[in-house]
Image 1 (spheres, rainbow over the protein chains, first blue to last red):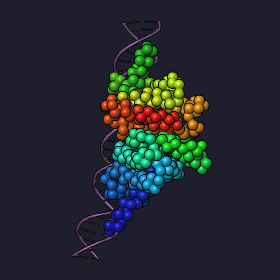
Image 2 (cartoon, rainbow over the protein chains, first blue to last red):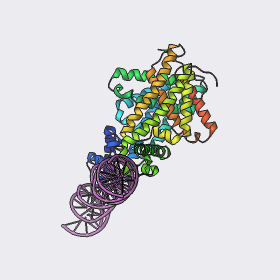
Image 3 (cartoon, rainbow over the protein chains, first blue to last red):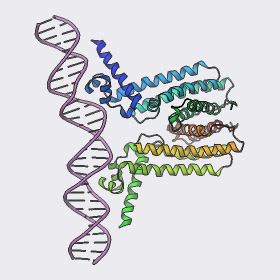
Image 4 (cartoon, helix red, strand yellow):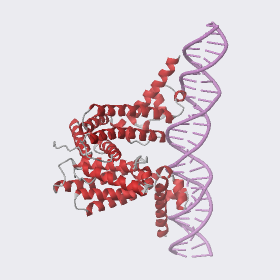
Length: 199
Length: 199
DNA sequence: GGAAGAAGTGAACTACGGTTCAATCCTTGT
DNA sequence: ACAAGGATTGAACCGTAGTTCACTTCTTCC
């Protein structure tokens, strides 16, 4: 039956995602995935030609979800400053609640295939931010600036702040986490030239 | 003779550095290093207990050099805005001229030992920036802000802008590189609240 | 109900690279 | 010059993890 095969494939994919979320790529051996999915190691290869394909697919799905949430947050808001705040809140909320996953998606050593995929998604994040900044400049809210550099730098800034030394521990305490997010938003708003004197 | 032994050790270290600079950690097998150094693979183990130690030592030396240059640039300047510009120019000049090395130092997947070392040096960069920002706030040049978050975010921003899609190709052309650096400096100065209207 | 073929199994294969070690060479001290 | 000790060698070892494949089991259709 076709359904059975498709179901198996889905189970394997879900298992791989769960393993990555729990133990990262480091712990994502075919054996571990197969065990989690309740199938034999060989069966994985009936559905995926190679580990890189499985892992790239899992990565793509997970990243796409993040980028979608990110883009959705950007679309709703009016001003660039609000938009930046919204995307950071969205992104940070998700990342700090699932730190292992965030690390895996953003920074963890992995296959070249995954690294390539990661580049694509970093660009996707940057594109969303670039659009936000561009709109802000057009609306006269923001000073003229290099949109591409600003967007890329912001991606790096957000990533570093949320998957670095600061973030460990921040995930544990609501207060610290909220402060981190607030401060990061201030940083981001200043960086694009949206003056906000609220502290 | 003691000199011979010490010379061997140095040759191996230099060879490892050269290999990393050329092919990154990925290409830095013991065999490759030994070949480059003109010794047998086994000899490497007379000088270093394990690959992780060799690689960590090489990494530490290379990183320390960068951090020193970074700190030196920060120390000279007067205002925070000038200081940030100076460190970015320093850092970017070096990184864009040796992109493979920069990637290896900043982002390339490697041993856990190296990852740990990397964290230390990211913190070192952040500490230099934090001090810069702190001085700026004390001098009344910069608005009050969370220094730690700002420093960490800046480290991420600089890294991403210089070891990302933007940087490939930028290394080739002097014009593009200079533009990238100029724009990144503007971004950084805005981000810490040092208003600069020069564009 | 039985044959055909796909899905599933898991032990074995393979590739890779770090590590070891017995044999060898070289330097040093007498 | 010769013995002793350490440095050097590089082939062999080992562990790991992705991949394969001969075999079993199940579904499906005649």
